[in-house]
Amino acid sequence: MMVVRDKTRSEPPHEGARYTQIAVLEDGVLVEHFVTSAASASLVGNIYLGVVQNVLPSMEAAFVDIGRGRNGVLYAGEVNWDAAGLGGSNRKIEQALKSGDYVLVQVSKDPVGHKGARLTTQISLAGRYLVYVPGASSTGISRKLPDTERQRLKEILRDIVPADAGVIIRTASEGVREEDIRADVQRLQEQWQGIEQSATDLTSKASGAAVALYEEPDVLVKVVRDLFNEDFSKLIIEGDAAWDTIDDYVKTVAPDLLSRIERYESGEGPDVFAVHRIDEQLAKALDRKVWLPSGGTLVIDRTEAMTVVDVNTGKFTGAGGNLEETVTRNNLEAAEEIVRQLRLRDVGGIVVIDFIDMVLESNRDLVLRRLTEALGRDRTRHQVSEVTSLGLVQLTRKKLGTGLIEAFSSTCTHCAGRGIVLHVDPVDNASNASSPAKKAETGRRAKRSRKGKTDDVVVARTPSHPQGEHPMFKAMAAANGHHEDDEDADVNEDALDDDALDEVEEVEEVEEIVETIQSAETPDNAPDQDEPEHEPASAGSNAASEPWAERAPEAAATEPGTAEPDAPAATPEPAAAAPEPAAAAPTRPRRRRSAARAAGPPVEH
Image (cartoon, rainbow, N blue to C red; front, side):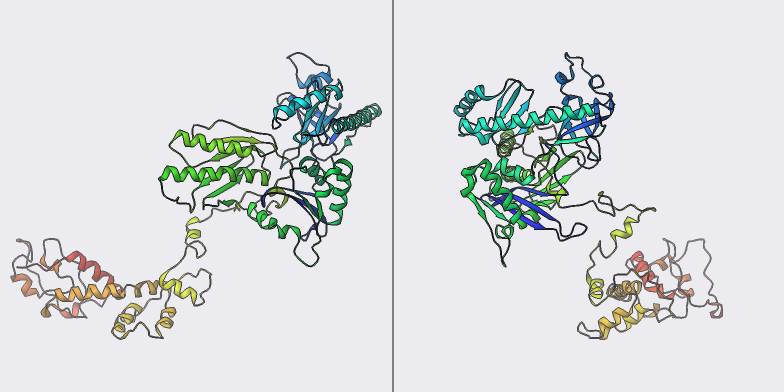
């Protein structure tokens, strides 16, 4: 089924301009899409009397002005050497063309990006049932036709094709009467004679400007001409302009298909694309990731050189069997979907597919055969190459018109299409990774953010606190009366800065360490709060096993093992000479923890 819709643009700068969309559905699934407008008309098929601007022998190409802004490219392989009067094998493009020459060219490929239009001097005119090739000496018949039909068409062409031209029979000619084929050949022959006469007249005038001699009909007419046949159940049209164009063409060329044309009047209801869920399928086709029915995924990336497709299992885990069977089933499903996406997106050029690795050679052949069978439904020219040593499948496909991405996208004004934003200075990726947008917070920090914390990054400054006023000590003092359902708990927590809160979260760990230390201490070893802390003694000293208390000088002198044999007895210092308490008293819990861990169990004497 084919569906056509006329629509008005709703976004600037072309707001209010009209365009036409054509969708081709197979069993309700969108497989091809075309869009046309006055501003984005395709140049493929147009014939120009161009002017050669310069010839590059090193590239074996010539740049030709066709009057469309950017110059087109004519490669040596597309030059008609017979028309140029050059024969033999030693033929060079600089011998056939030079700057300022007039040359009759036809556009074979639209300009894409920075690449100009591809040109050829081998002219061809497309009709409904065949393609007329002036100057050719052979005929060709589509391989999709059965042998009996091919033989019938050969006999017909033997009588109706002129001697100075060739034809290529299309699949639409299957079962067509000889009179219809003869009329198609005659119409195209007259059309070519008119083009050739115009080129001769303009060349004699030597005006020096490129001129368009023939322009292909609108994409709407081309699609109906090339696709719409007896295989389609119906053609649904919404829009007065589209209806008038198609109705006039079908009445003239294929009146037997008039009964399959329907006009859709939406009124106050949904339009024809919404009824057949075409807009929904188009939106999915514009995504980079494509979901397979079983849960696998395709990731399609387009580059300047090629299009790359990556196949993943995604959510597909298989239904029994082993890993090889699961991977093979996913690849078989991906092969058919890849071909549908290539047709729908109208991807042209080189395509590289990275299927999931399979161990068995028979499974790899099965996937490649399924891909080839699916490509058989694609009407454009394609070729599947051999699998590379890395297991990649390569193929080439000829583009039909404007791709889906090109039709519904524009280059980003910030990154110019690169997908990244460049900065003058190096970017701190570490800070970006730890930012709230990059890293999800959990626990108490997430709880604070849910209560209205702003996204701005605030640098925390921990103030110096007097002894005994540190937030961690205050929290330890109130720990015994704390309850989980206390309403003021969250409020007090929000009042702390980030660094203080980190220490509050360690309160429970510190309490456990303190209890362990207290259980290892004896009552007579309790330190005086006014006495200074001492660094742990050497490894051979028993004082190192009790870091929280300083033993009496007398006991240290009389107990064995407290000092080296030759060391003098320790002399007690007067109390007045004791230094003031250290200013870093708030760090005592951390030092206690490290000291307790280093001390180990008490030493027995």
